Length: 338
Image (cartoon, rainbow, N blue to C red; front, side, top):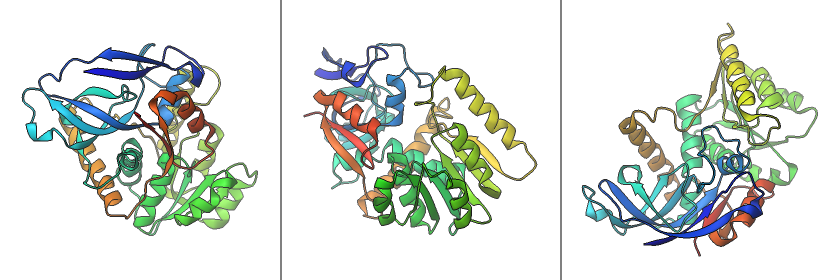
């Protein structure tokens, strides 16, 4: 089968992304060939474009962190009933394509009736938000959390999942996103307010029970100081927008978190890695399938909503990347084949 895909040739501007067409091999044993209906632009691809994502492949390569699509065909040792089913998968790379071959064990069924673009917004973002909230920070109903970048794909999802459990959410974002955040029950604050820390303390005098930070640097330090005794800080910054060498900055962040974690104040600090534990592939697949199924079910039931910032054709991937990096609209930019 012939597939069209996007190639990232090196550290380039969004306009430097390239399209190519190549012949895909048929699905082999344990594999499925998927016709992609939707992919998306996340922080990971933005970091990869700058050469700043830890462990990214050598240039050139095809980006695309997650996909939703229809199973076209399967290889040996794969249940033939998968053919024709809509599925979701985390790919890390390779998703910006019209077709791709994936391990069948990585596929998660998408509930009937869900729009593929809506479902796509909750693949990586949904798993990330669910695991940070419930597996890493272990936030309980009635507690208060701080979410930096609450207007982003992960932030919006995290806020919705938290509100389902009666968790109070303070979210930082540009003022233009505040009305949208209020609609989700979030208490919005201006991320550029010089008195931001003071305003958060006014809302949570005893400190927040958990803080989720995707910015790093001074924002991470401030979030740590705003924690209540026994609180949890979860960092998921991948140094996408910091200046200077990426590896030293990343290592400094990890060292800082490690130091904070041993201080005798009862607080916890951790770095969330979506791919942690992948060496035990069976356990990783089971955990991911369970968490993604939970989030997609909540979407199908109407208990949370998909935040699609825009739908952009694959052939205009440069526009999709530019729009996502501008953060002008809340939610996730979805890339569609047509």
